[in-house]
Amino acid sequence: MKPDGSGCSLLLYKDARVDMRILDEVFGEMNWKRHHDVVNGNLFCTLSIWDNEKKEWVSKQDVGTESSTEKEKGQASDAFKRAGFNWGIGRELYTGPFIWIPLEKNEIYQSKTGSPALYTKFSVKEIGYNEQKEIILLVIVDNKNRVRFAYGNTKEKVYAPNVSASNASGKVYTGVDLDRAIKQMTGVKSREELERVWAEHPELHNNKEFRNITIDMQKTYPPRN
Image (cartoon, rainbow, N blue to C red; front, side):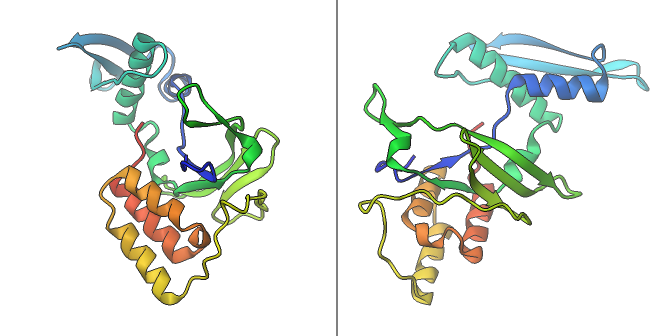
C-alpha cells in the first residue's frame, strides 16, 4: 500500500486447498501424495505423482518460507504450494497485469504497528487465459461487489472512488513526461521500486504503453508468493 493510503497493489493468490483440488481433479485422489522434511532447519515439501506408464512415483520438491501467522503451518503450506508450482500449478498467476487500486479514506485504518491497513476485501470475479495459459482477462471486485479493476476485453465499468484532495494530482502529462515515467519504470531494480514508480504516476495507469512496460517489468520482479 502507498504510505499515504491513496492506493494499493494486489497480488493474485490461491491457497493450498486450491492446489489439492486441482491435484484431485487432474490426477485422482489416490494418485498423488506429499511429505515434508526438515533440511538444515528449513521445511521442504516433496509432491509425488503416480506415473502409470513407468509404474513409479515422480517427485518434485521445494522449500517453504514462514508466514506472519501460524509459523509451522504457514511454512508447510508454502512449501506445498511451491512444490505444486514446480508441477505447473499456479504458474499462470505470474502472467497477470500489474494491479493497482485507488482507495477511499474510509477504506483504510491504522494497524497496531502504525502502518496503513485495509477494511476492504478484494476477490476475482472473472479471469480468462489464452492457449499459452497467460492471463488475458481479469476483473476484481470488492466486498460490496463493486468492480475495482478490469483488464482485457471486458465491458465491466470500474468504480471510481472519491480520492481526497491531498491524494489527487494536478499533473498534466506530456509526451516528455510519459517518456520520463517509462524511463523510471524500465530502470527499477526491485519489486518495491516497481510499485513505488507505479504509484507515483496515477495519471498513467490507463496509458497502454506505460501499463505494458509495467507488466513486462513485473515479469523480471514478480510478486513474492
